[in-house]
Image 1 (tube, one colour):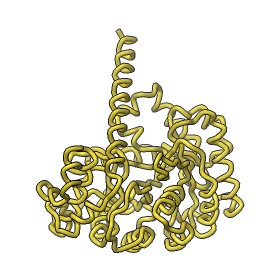
Image 2 (cartoon, rainbow, N blue to C red; image 1 turned 180 degrees about the vertical axis):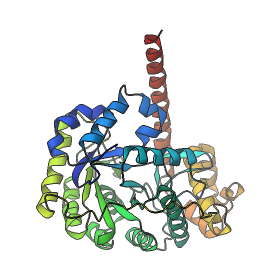
Image 3 (tube, rainbow, N blue to C red; image 1 turned 30 degrees about the vertical axis):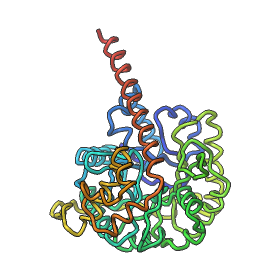
Image 4 (cartoon, rainbow, N blue to C red; image 1 turned 90 degrees about the vertical axis):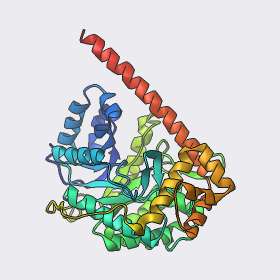
Amino acid sequence: MSNLNHPYGVGLAYRFNLHEEVLHFDEEIDLLEIPTIDHIVRRRALSYPQAQEKFVEVLEKFPCIAHGIGMSIGSVAPLDEGYFTNTLKLLREAGISVFSEHLAYTRMNGSNSGSFLGMPFHDVSLDWLAQNYLRVRNRLGRPFALENVSLSFQIPDSDYTEPEFLSEFLKRTDATLLLDVTNLYNNCTNYGMDPMEYLHALPPDRISQIHLAGGHYDESGFLTDCHGYTVMSDVWEIYREALQYTSANMVIIERDYRYDPFREVMEDVRKAREIFYELRPQSSPDESQIPQEISHNEEELFDETAGEFDNLRSFQGAILRAITDDDFRKRTDSDPKLVCELFPMEDDWVARFAGCEKLDQKAMSWKENERLDHEDEERLRQWEWSQWATQT
């Protein structure tokens, strides 16, 4: 269990395969962000020998925060109880107080998009998110942060702009925002918003953390969320402004692949630290951004089948089905009203579904993720066989 429970400054998203590099540069890394999925999804945790020993070592050496990707808090559906229980177990056993997830959904009706899908910017989404956040918060026993995501497509006919939607969610809850500056920049670039106007439309005192990552333009010129490149030059300007405007005291550089040469990763860490300590004290002036535990409350009753969420539930199911089922997508492309055969919804929601572009590109991405997952499973089986062989 970590006794270094006062995370502050600039750090790195931790990966087991970067363990030696992280230890080598320990004096330049203020904190580590632990990806919960590495510990609660079997294939990742088992793919690295001595993973638990490495985890204990970093907990003893660095202040750590935790970041999840699989809660799917936006899904109008029951919580994934196994995922939630293992997340809570990890936080308790590791002694980690600061936790974050994504303001998005990934799963519905047994399907999983493999990437984050943004919520429709409507009041019904806010009603659901506020309710579901409260459920998770009460069971976690602490407030937590939610991250803005990079949007693969826009949903037409919105009640709010993206920053207005985020601000309204924060107003309705005690959540804080993990501001991914790269995702902010991606969405502004792709959909014609001004990054500084977006930033200044957010409540500055409700932003607790910042993420920085690389970006990559696809063949169509669409800027995608990509954690395999260095931070883009324009993002650094927004980051500096974000530190001046907000009270965020924890900054994480995200890098999920293309680590070699590792000096490039550390160059981003050093630049982020230089700007951070130019604008922040050398040590945390207080602990106000460390979430305080609250009483565990299981008395709250939530009804995922409530009629007020019927349209949103059907819309989410239809989007997931269009991504994972080519035949369904082609049929509804030609006649959007056919969506109601499986996912009944009112005409305005059918129109929103029909207006979602780039679902075919999202489907291609889903297929690639599925292929990579199968390769991961095969590598795990080979590793398990090799481990078994050494025991016989």
